[in-house]
Image (cartoon, rainbow, N blue to C red; front, side, top):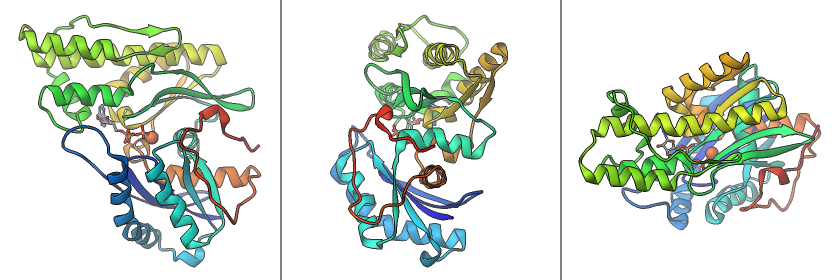
Amino acid sequence: MISLGLESTAHTFGAAVANSKKILSNEKDSYTTKSGGIIPIDAAKHHEKIYKELINKALENAKISLKDIDFISYSAAPGLGPCLRVSQNIVKELKLPFVEVNHCVAHLEVGKFLTKAKDPVLLYASGANTQIIAFEAKKYRIFGETLDQGVGNFIDSFARYIGLGFPGGPKIAKLAEKGKEFIPLPYVVKGMDVSFTGMLTNLKQKYDSKKYKIEDLCYSLQETTFAMLLEVSERAMAHCNKNELLLGGGVACNTILQEKSNIMCKEKGAKCFVPENQYLVDNAAMIATTGISMVKAGYKLKTKDPKIYPYQRTDQVKVFS
Ligand code: ATP
Ligand code: FE2
């Protein structure tokens, strides 16, 4: 079973090839802006321009030709309409059988494919998303999420404000290494949900006051943010009685978050799983492997009318098992 995976929910276009045992290639290219957020139409134009080249590269690196591909797995949901339509059109153009994959579920399923995790709670911490997802009572469910912006967007906003550029996550992490003094910041956990706008405003005010060292602000930002994320992750694990935590999303590349996740799991007698960075950020390998898992579990391949679902929620995903 060989699948070509396509990812195009937001600013990353990815193409990958996988079989039921292994990921054979994983190519990606991202649309970026110097300032401000993503313009969906421009991101889609970027994807349209590079998709042929990236698909060819993915096939080449996997040493596979298009006629060896059994089916396409594409990110049909959730995401930005114009971006989602790029993969939808590629599926129409290539005329191969296909599987419609949910991007958020793929972040979880790729962890199961790559690591020994069997039934984990996923802490999905990316630019646009912050969700705690687990499979429970026959559905993928969101146990907690951000009430405003995604954790990565929050970190990137502060980084932009202090002139670090985009993406800010790795730059904030570098400065945080030199931080020594912890500065209390708004810690907002409401039930199982988190919120970051209050902390962002407070950080900007503290930065403008010039009373604080920037390294200490970055250090405190990370300490506070990651403690919030792990508090809700831990509670979700206890609630679902699961003893595995899986990290996903670009912010999970942060080694301090990884360290803290490991410590939390160790203290609970649970296991922590962190896939390689290339599978944490948005990528097509996770779409290909999730498609394969779905087909193995009984998903009937489709042959006509590929759809997109920009607003599909994680608990609306049909499960095959
Ligand atoms: P999604 O569409 O799934 O929400 P995305 O495209 O918004 O994804 P990703 O590609 O998963 O996001 O991740 C990008 C985010 O990861 C950026 O906000 C970036 O700052 C952050 N990031 C990357 N490396 C690090 C790091 N070492 N520490 C903290 N944040 C990081
Ligand atoms: Fe993602």
